[in-house]
Image (tube, rainbow, N blue to C red; front, side, top):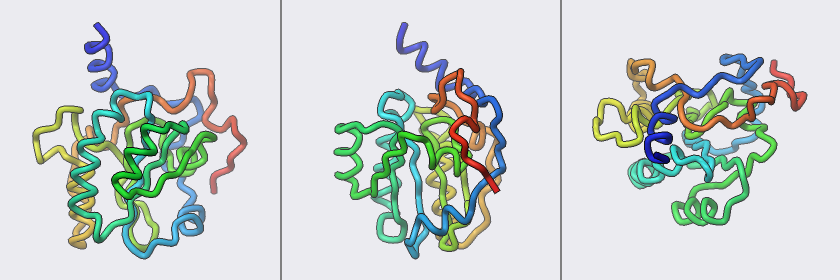
Length: 186
């Protein structure tokens, strides 16, 4: 029964939090936060989310393929020894986002999600790793394809809505208001 509940959760869009505004991104925050001169891959990961855990293998594949040309960050919602150990083994930078500042600033309300920044710290891609947690179709391996296109200086591929509709585990409690922490977007 638990398997099917998790499977259904992964296939259903994550409910949009009250007050969410999808296109409000604080680019000043990105430039000040990340000093890397390479593209940046941000992986929003929740160690308690089965959907996030299913993407660890996919993250490892992306990391091994692009590690020489990309800076990798794991944005972890909760301080978890297992998650930290896993990402340290992948040589990813780790940021604990318990107050959800990064999620707010980048318009993320669900895990697992990916944000790819180009060299100028502009968002190139914000969306899902892949179409399903058992992704075997290279055409829907969205994060890999987006990063590959960026590094080849190509436009973002023409993905379906599956790439951009968040699914998985909500970062926010149902009672939370998107703006309840007092963050102001400009």
